[in-house]
Amino acid sequence: MYYIKTFDAEDRLTGAEKIEVLVYVRWQESNGMLVRCTEEEAQGIIGADDNTVYLINGNLPHGEKEPYAEFITKEEYDQIVGEDPEDEDPEIPEGTDETEVLTRAELTEEVKGLKERNDFLEECLLEMSEIVYGGE
Image (cartoon, rainbow, N blue to C red; front, side, top):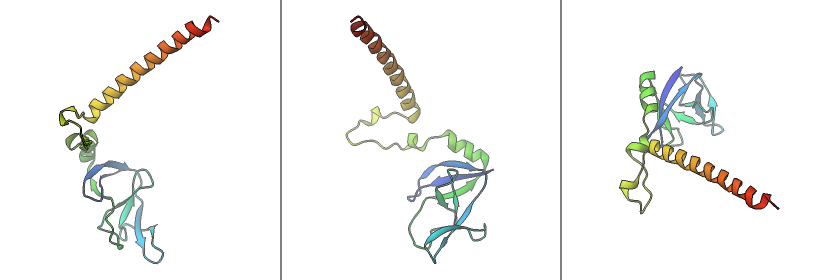
């Protein structure tokens, strides 16, 4: 098992992944595509979703910044997965009071409660509909 921490093009930590089989890729200049390669030739790896490419050895030759990854230990992976970077530096919508901003964990609990209330109200409406319209 391999563990990586991932960053966006602006060098912000975006998460961590565990990958069972590493797939190395490099930029093939002749046709402008990424192709599989050996570890020695690698400029990037394929992420756990089998789709995302993360740089591992600097920028690609075309000079654009791309998401990148660094190899880490399982302990560091567990620590990152247990934390949520959005809790430390949340995106606050314009016009929102900062004291009203919830962590993702708080948001999850809030959504769960709202879903339960919504389900209850739907049941009430169905029962009321049966009483009102079922008697005809």
